[in-house]
Amino acid sequence: MATYRQAGKMTEVDVETNYFPNPEVLKRLIITESGFVFDPLRGKNYRVNSNGLAIIKFIQDGSNLAQIIEKLSEEYHVSREVIEHDVQEFFTNLQQQIK
Image (cartoon, rainbow, N blue to C red; front, side, top):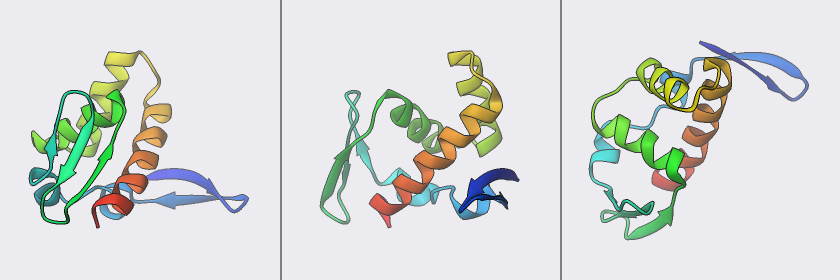
């Protein structure tokens, strides 16, 4: 569970259930090292930054939310809380792209 400010109030959200992209959907994506992402099923493409690229690769490799947050926190020397918020925001944006 994570807590976020929404509409002026603090809301507890189950990030894993509500935002974590379906790993099966992510497995079908074709991703280049430059962050170009192509979804062959939908015929759509988009770009992600280096952080987004790392997150998608972690998911494709079978990492869960806690593992992703831990890896990014260690790599970038940023608190878990900041990373968790950023990952949740990325998941929200990603969900809109790969529905």
